[in-house]
Amino acid sequence: MPNLFKKALLFGLLILFASFLAPKKKIIVILKHGSQLVYDMDAGNAHYDLIVTIKKTKPEISFSYETTGPNPKKGAITIPAKDIDSARSLNNDFGGGTKTLDGETSVFLSRAIYAEVAMAGMTEGGTSFKANSNEAIENFTKGEPNQNEIKVNGKKIQIDGERFYDYVDEKHGNYHYAFTLMKSDDYPLILEMNLGWIMHLKEMKDVDVQTVKEE
Image (tube, rainbow, N blue to C red; front, top):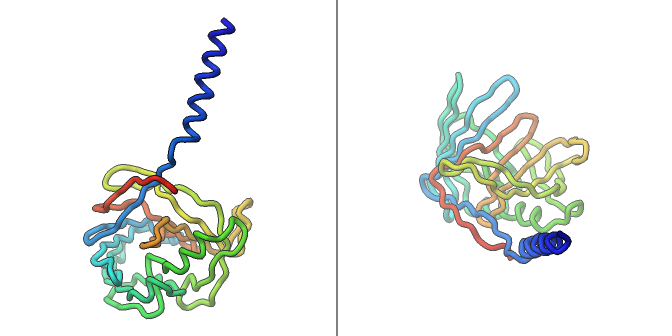
């Protein structure tokens, strides 16, 4: 019996050791023409879907959108390449119509903001931007990276996200604004945003999915 126990213990340790040696993998979602993003929008007294359809991803990003509910809207937004690179203001107007942004992004944050969040320490550094285009710039602090269960091409998978807040007290869940961005150097897509009203990505359709080893 002691020998059997030792063998079982050794086998368990070998499995544990192998799990540490096994390369970690991450899932990368690639957006393309025709990709569709379905957000759950919760404004307290209003609950509806925001459906975004990607029209172009390079060099600028453009998409059409429509909202559901009792007062549906349709529109289209173009984000110039310069703003996808470095804008520090977020436009959250989905009231309909066609517009090209200037100095702003929408649904995405800029690569500059993403780089600052991705590189910052857990409680050090961070980034700054306007969470609403009509508000002042605010400073944000990085929180714990997280995983977000999202339905992708009909199957629920875990998408890695970068989480960050302003006025943060993460332990007690106290913050003014909060964001989660998809981990992507190319397309810092908003997975979740809480600005007093909540925008939460629940489904992605017609996207390319890759599994790669983490470095």
